[in-house]
Each structure stands twice: as structure tokens, then as C-alpha cells.
Image 1 (tube, helix red, strand yellow):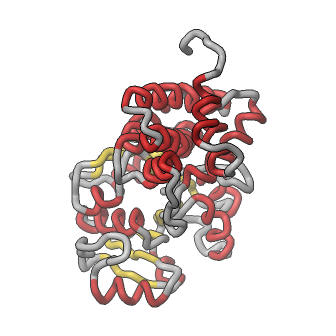
Image 2 (cartoon, rainbow, N blue to C red):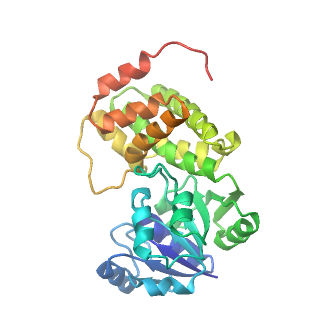
Length: 322
């Protein structure tokens, strides 16, 4: 089995390492030629995964032609870059199985990764890989379970077998909308959870925030045609738990910095920051209330401060739990 991975960040590199250890030959593509050369020569992505050695069956390149040999290509890039990246490839990926590994909603179009793939590469088979995972855990061979979403059952089963390894277990679903929205919206809730901790409101408040955030995720997902049970699985609740409770989560750390009133490194990708605004826009089209997402979007846009955000949530009308 040979697999291409577009994107030499932490997650793309981690997947390349895990799949190579599982027996695949992998081409890891970087848009930066010098970065590709350094990773290939040193066998280490020192910027994103220091200390993790790349197996010899991973080749690293910046040449687009190098991915022509692969029928399956993983797209490991931030959601806000995916549409432009596929345009840059100018049809070279059409006809392949393309797996989105991004978690988010495109701010410009309101689309998820699978639909972006479908529009950019009409003859490709789109799929989605998502769920509770940190790149460092995957790269170091720690047990990880993910959701693989693919509308084509036969292709999904083949892909599940190809991408699973002894420590990377994939569960299959055909509910692409549910898997996409679970992975996207949990980042927004994670920012809110970080704000709660940064503001010193405590773990009890975080638990309440996570619970209400999960209800919010389900409401929007179901309104968009997803299956409620998908949100209760790895791509929804599982990823939500991980992202809202771990210091490894960039979205949680970003939210905590907001809560503390501290600056956050602008070079670090925080998918939930863009997704919050996209989710609010999507919810309005479907007539769904998302108070947590609206609060996060307003905080990110600097329209409100943290005390105002807490007041907005705590002073909402009392209601039944749904």
C-alpha cells in the first residue's frame, strides 16, 4: 500500500510516521522545498515533532509529481487553506481517494472538507478522518481511535483497512456531515472551556460549559442533516472531551489565554477561531441558537471582553435541560 500525505505539519507528519510503521510506503509533501529537504535528510520534523524519527519508508518532497503514484492522498492542512490548496493542485488530484484530515468549517463558503474536495475534484472520492487525537500521541505510537467517514461504503471499508494499524484504530461511518461538524464544533467549545479555566471559574464551570456546548453541537448537526448518534461517538463527544481537557489542545490554550488576558502566538493555527464565526453563520441559516459559539465568535472578534462573555451565558433565561 502506498499513501500520499499533503501537509508536513504536526498532524500530517504524525500520520505519515504511523502509516509507515503500519507497513505503508508514504510520500509526505511539503509546500516549502527547503523544509522538505531538511526533513528528508535529517529524518525528523524538528519544528513540529522534535524527537520523532521518520521511518525509511517515508519520503519527503516538495514536488507535486511525486504524488502521482498514489491513489489515496490525505489532506493534512488547516481547513481555511484547503480550498486554495486544491486550486493550486489544478486537477492533479482528481480521480483519487482524497481524505480530509482538517477539522473546521470554511469561513468563506461554510463548507466542510468533503464538500470542498467534491467541488474542486469532481471525480475524486472524498472521505474524512477525524476524532480524538493529538499528533504527538499518534507519532509516538500511542493507541488512538478515529472516525473515518465515507459515503461510498465499499470504498470506505477498503480505506478503513488500508489506514488502520495495530495502534491506530478506525471506526467507519457514512455520516460525513455528523463527523465533519463534530470535529469542527468541538474546537469552538474547547476555546470556551479554555476561557473558563483562564478566567478562574473552575472545573465545575468547565464541565457545565462542555455539557451545554455538546448540546449545541448536536442541535446544529441534526439541523444540517447529521445523525445524532454520530455526535455521541469519537468524532463528536470523544474529540470534545480530549480537546476541552488537555494542555496539548491549541484551541484550549488559545481560550485560556483569552481568559487570562494574555497574548497568544499568532503563528499557531487555532481552527476554532475561524470556525466559531462560520458556525454562527451556518446556525442562523438553519434557525438554530448557538450561545456558546456566539460568545466565542464575539470574543475572537474583540466585540466583547471576558466578563461580558460570562454575563451573556450566565444571564440567559432559565429553561429545561435539552
